[in-house]
Length: 283
Ligand code: S5P
Image 1 (cartoon, protein in one colour):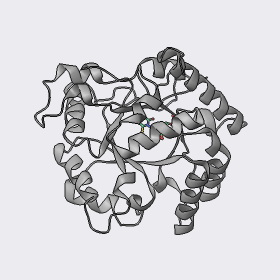
Image 2 (cartoon, protein in one colour):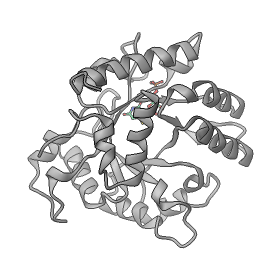
Image 3 (cartoon, protein in one colour):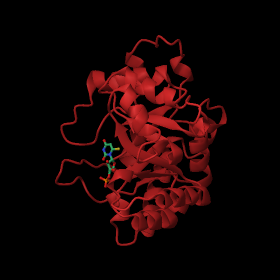
């Protein structure tokens, strides 16, 4: 199985079968940015301010919407307008992890109405294949908004010390991604998983592994720290992209900086430079 990470985003966008992945690569190319900012602030004002100021420099804005102390419908509609204004996608880092019947209700409807405003969501596969199937099937509900603009990342590895998402757990993540690749865009992982995928037999769904092109989002990216006191472990944008990240996710390195706009530009330059290096500098 060949990884597509040596190819430019524009080439990967060209014939990509998943419309949201295609859009994501197109945005990255247009904005010359592979940065996802993890906007882990706790008020709507801070979140919307960051979205507006950092919006021009990012491909994706990642939220933990349930940490906002004052979430309203206006927060969500304004966030959507800012995503349209600055051309970025919204990734709600809800990490669904429950039986199918429950995650469908958490994703579509409920207090957070995630399906209405988040282009990208993620899940952990601890419950088994059913969680991926249930989330994918939610997009077939008659009142599901814009199924072409919704996608899932499987959390195949974690950056925290002692993470148990390793070995066969990570292999299963790749296997489930292949079975539901109409909805699964790729992974949150610390590296490209093409080697892990190669270790598996070509999948039962009959999808040729050579044809697949999953996106890798790598979190735990920071230009100045090695980690925090609660087990987070960091790597640099260069290291993450070198290991196969297509999109780098940085939180505190950007939003806690004295000047978050200056910081996001540094992460963008570092991430883009590493990407150009990886694809041979030709683009
Ligand atoms: O393995 C992971 C997966 C995720 S999504 N490790 C992580 O740190 N995350 C998330 O990335 C985490 O929930 C947080 O929102 C962000 C990292 O933030 P930072 O401030 O440490 O850059």
